[in-house]
Length: 70
Image 1 (spheres, rainbow, N blue to C red):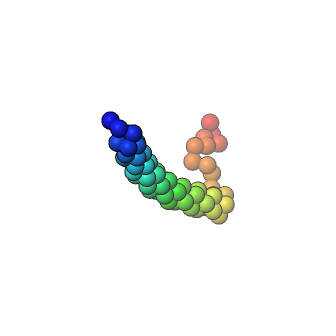
Image 2 (image 1 turned 60 degrees about the vertical axis):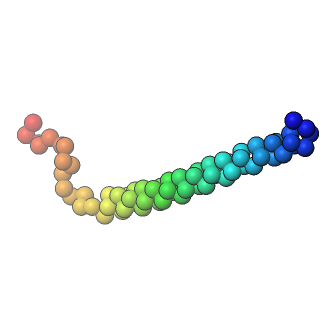
Image 3 (image 1 turned 45 degrees about the vertical axis):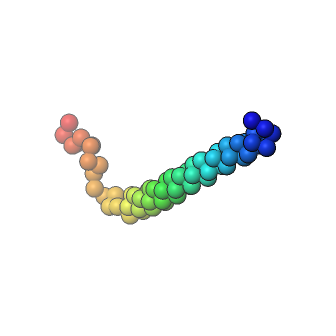
């Protein structure tokens, strides 16, 4: 192989690696986006649960509490 062919082969190898890296970055970006959506949903759910706990009727006895005759 002459030097020009070697250099061409190296460029092709670099271009292949770059294409794989670009694909990987796009895949990772899509995964991060999906995870962020899930985090946002979970944060909203936690906020609703907190609000529910703050506004619930506190005059009711807890569900797992034993009755007074025990």
